[in-house]
Image (cartoon, rainbow, N blue to C red; front, side, top):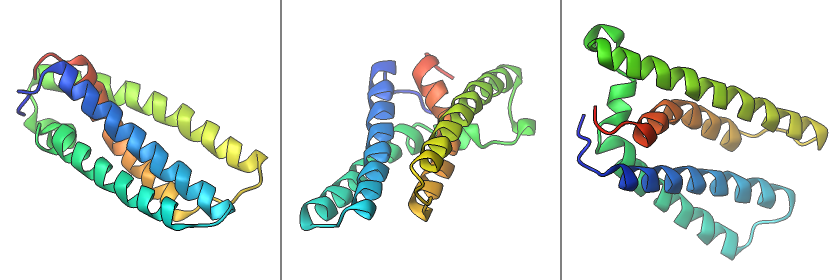
Length: 139
């Protein structure tokens, strides 16, 4: 894994990636309830481009995505420890976030659509890498 980016740059990339994903879903859900217009369509396209660019820079180019999805047999002891810790924290955060989100949708009696489901799957896959990008000096 290439961790040439400073920890501050990785943290900035993580924040941009997560915020753009969150805003993309939020605007989509809002427009599903109200109505789409040109402003929201353009905003969604821009958010998707920002998400894609920050995802590529933060997770793909640094190798975090590949690292977190490697089989255990290809990791050394230190990497197994880092991966295990990041997975533990990531799924704690994911579980709480998802349950609160599902509870909110149930309370307001709104159906869950495919955009939310896909974003939650992506969120689950990047959370372990987010933990590593945020905390590790180098791998």
